[in-house]
Length: 282
Image (tube, rainbow, N blue to C red; front, side, top):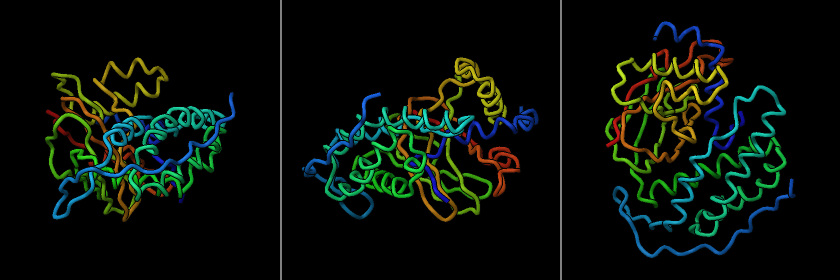
């Protein structure tokens, strides 16, 4: 099974065929960016029982920007998917260049892999976008950044069908969400920020949001959620891990998994089976 670099938001649109459930719960030819000599770390930060070299702040801020870009997925046609890949390539080019220019030595090979795929992404090459090599490279970048950037780390365990965060209160700012999938199905951890004072239950909020998604009018989404956290969230196949940095402002967030149950996606979405809850960001 191949997995795109960030296979997240496409899961949302896969749910539009399942909205009945929510009623129960309420032009230039691009070239690859060259890989420069890595910068050296000047200090170290403590992570667990070990000291990890602190990464260049420019690298870390670029990763936050990279992860905030919504990936392709869920388009209604192959042609639309190709266009979305091209647009995504244009978006990631600048942060990827900054990450590459400020990368530690251990990430040079991974960033060379990502830069090598960039021309094909600009061409809308689906196989390049769904490259397992690209997925592995970006996950390695995420893993090193989780330790070296000093982001707050939030550990989440996924099972069929529940999320267990290590805590439900986080500090505002970049958070490295690290998802461990102990279930038999793939899972993704997405966030929506609730409007202040909203008294709807979490399932109703997600259901209303998905109904607005199906309308095809992005402006309508703001009627039911305060913020759609850009970039998606961590995805993990069964028995694996995934990580993703999200820059969060203060508020209350609903976390949820939109992936339909079953190998062919014939079942209800995972959030309707219990993979839903709340986080507070202060």
